[in-house]
Each structure stands twice: as C-alpha cells, then as structure tokens.
Length: 288
Ligand code: UD1
Image (cartoon, rainbow, N blue to C red; front, side, top):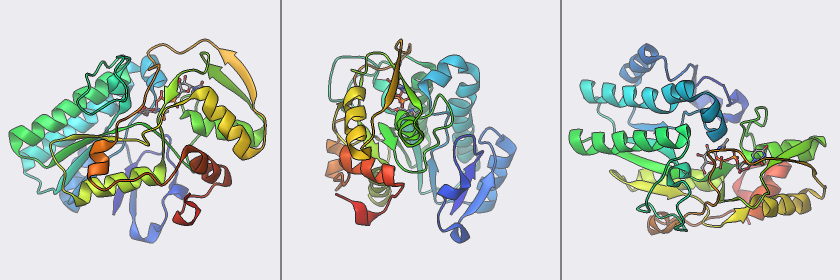
C-alpha cells in the first residue's frame, strides 16, 4: 500500500502496520511527482482522500483550496485517461456539503444539490468530472459523500479542524470551546471505522459510476453532541458563544439506504463512538 500525504493535517503515527506501507510526504498538487508515482506503482485501487477539508478555510482561501480540492484531482484523472493507466477503481471522496441548505431531509444521493461554499462547489464540480470521465472514457470511477467523520487521531490543532476533534481537545485539556451560532445546527456524525467498512463494501462490490452517501443516518444538533460528550467524559465543557459562520449548512442527515443495500450496518452509535474517541481507542472490541 502507498500513501501520499503532505501532513498538513494528518500524522504519521496514525498509520499502523508501517512496515507494509510506503509513505510519501508529498503534496497532491505536485503533478510531476504524482504522475511518476502512478507510473511506478501502477496501482489497482486509488482512494482519493486528500483535501483541505474545512468549509470555513475554503471561504478564507478559495484559490488555494480550489487547487487542492479540484485541480489536483482533475489533473490525476486526466493523466490516467491519457496514459490508459489500468486501474480497477478510482474512488473520490466528496462531501455532504454539496447538498447545501435545501429543505429535503434526509439527503438521498439523488436529492437536489445546492453547494454554497467554495469547498462544496469544488467537491461537486469534481464529482461531476469523476463521473463524466467514468462514462466518457470508460474509467472505473465512483464518488462517495462523507458526512461528518470523526475518530481518534483526528488533528484538533487548527481552528478549521473537525468540531469533535476540537471538543475532545477542550474537554481533555480544560480549554474553552467556541460555539458558532446557537448550537441547533445538526450533523450526521459517523465514526471512522464505519467509514472504512463502507469504503470496503464499495470496493468489493466493484461499484462504479455512482455517488454514495457515507454516514450514520442519525441527525444530532451540536448542543446534543456536547451534552452526550460531557456525559461520556464526565466533565463539563467551558463554552463561549460566537456568531454563526457564513456558508454553513444548517441541517444535515443522510439516507444510507444505498450503502445498506451493499450490506452496510453502522456499528457505532454516537455515544459509543464518543466513548472510543475519549479513550483514544479504535478497535472492534469496543464496538457497541
Ligand atoms: C465537515 C467536515 C468536511 C465534510 C463535512 C461533511 C471538517 C473540518 N469538516 O464540515 O470536511 O465534508 O463535514 O458534512 O472535518 N463548530 C463550532 N466550533 C468549532 C468548530 C466547529 O461551533 O470550534 C461548528 C461549526 O460552525 C459547524 C459544526 O460545528 O456548525 C460542524 O463544523 P465542522 O466540524 O467544521 O464540520 P462541517 O462544516 O459540517
């Protein structure tokens, strides 16, 4: 297995079985490097997970995030097409952010989209390229829409980090958490091990030319998440309020019926996932 990561948010210690993995500390925008790597490795399966994952960051730095979240992916697809690289699957990770604020809930894969941030626009545009390249050039491509993924090892160090990594850091280190908005915004939080299972199912079923939601299927407000986490950690959170962030989605929850058709069941309730996160563990033995 080969991993490319510029470690802007990731960490080497999160990669287990390091003797079986070749790691390149490189940026996906380095086109020459990526092309050379594809030629040398001739990979069967490509999981395109690299991204600047923050909606708020994309609003601060739209040009830079566009280069990572769109152009780098497009360049790789184009190289695969031009060189007829014999891949078995190219899986692009898109986002629930593409659905935006339209009222239909839960979000089905064929629900209307309304991307409202540079992040969401890049994810949606890239999805369309990935699917069109599949259809036009007969490439085995597939897209997934991640809802809010969380789990041990997530980096809390940036103000743009995922909210559960920041909450964990605040509870563990007695720091003050800044809540943007009134906390009634909702998300569908999915534990990282469930995400891995979903990806595995999509690969083993050779799914192509489709978009699939990856989520837990439950809607929780930020306030509710804080309440559950305080109980799990047996701590009370120091909280400061700030105005809501622009470009954000108010409510988010997925229909996971397509994944369920492939054999998916969620093994982690939010409470069980938060307990595992709090303990810093992530292994099958602690499943609920
Ligand atoms: C997250 C992911 C994004 C993914 C999307 C899918 C991150 C950084 N973002 O975006 O990659 O595509 O889910 O749904 O992992 N909040 C606070 N205080 C904080 C941080 C956040 O109140 O210190 C609030 C935010 O304003 C937001 C909610 O918590 O309302 C969730 O924020 P965040 O974790 O950044 O996730 P999304 O924007 O949903």
